[in-house]
Image (cartoon, rainbow, N blue to C red; front, side):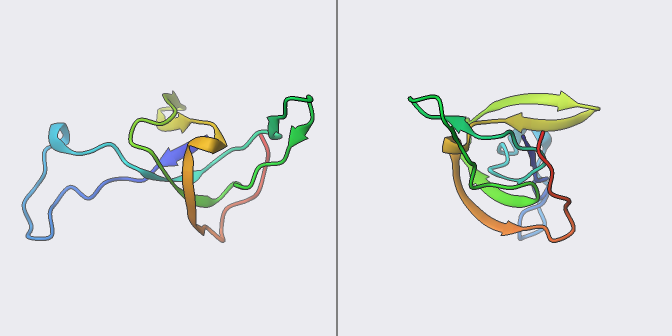
Length: 95
């Protein structure tokens, strides 16, 4: 599960961008992970991403949900394009 990052509401020149014109975020923080994916033989393959990782994902990847009033995206690890960093303050946990 990924918490999308907030988009800047202004351009570099200071022009305000209305909500309807803002693009869907393509970067976010991993807030929960499962045990892994299952192989064709039924073995669980461990995930590369961990809670607290900052990741890039495709514009239309995953399924958008609301958890406790917050936007989140549930997606497969294969939909993640890359890990761009890690939030050192995040606690590692499995969901």
